[in-house]
Image (cartoon, rainbow, N blue to C red; front, top):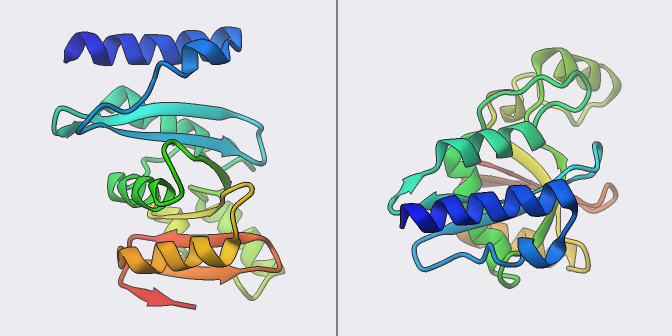
Length: 178
């Protein structure tokens, strides 16, 4: 299985480096693996990563996901809660294998959060984004209300619905909806 993991990681890295979509398609999740495909709407970066295999998280894959989910305002990187990644994987899987998830906001530094809070009443003073435990997403071509419903069905934490801004907020805090 370690050879498969090395092959998958190498294929994804090579495909990303050379923009070869055919090689990236070889990174399909095997039984017991979890895979995420993310697109950061602010930086234009994408990642396709097997982040769980053989009963454990893959540290290199988590680092790759942390980088894409960094605070795009100041490039600060922080660890994202692995349980948030599992929740995101489970929700996106409800719409089909390896859905491309558009990320509006992942990690948010305290400085960025304070700036956003000064300009909007909808930003929490102690946002879970600052702890790497929240993400704002949409799935292209998918109904936002259905995404919200799928996230709520998981009962993995908070789910916020922002149809005017075209995203759903998910976090790994207590179960609540708004």
